[in-house]
Image (cartoon, rainbow, N blue to C red):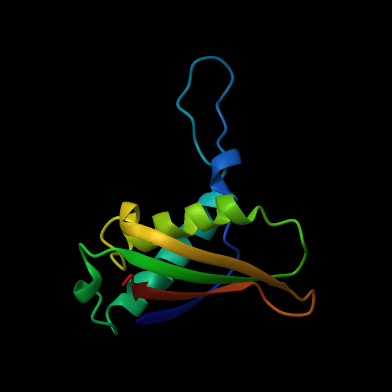
Length: 123
């Protein structure tokens, strides 16, 4: 099992894509991209302290608890963004290997936003 806590907001990037007027390439707003980049850097730093290779190529089960300030988080899209972050950071080799998951949220307006992640080999 690998257990990781990342500090900060996990954005729902699926609905955040923007296209400039006319014909332009779709892009994520800079704040959304900055949030994603910050999470990815944290995950990469955590990867160096863990032996993540033992999970590569195996079916995985992922448990996620989002700690949010309010109940407006789009949990399924935030979860998708989080899997992308974990894959790009090298924590998981491919998000298609996630075959089971549990996603929840804790709301506390007085606490900083974060996400707790536990990754298990699916047996």
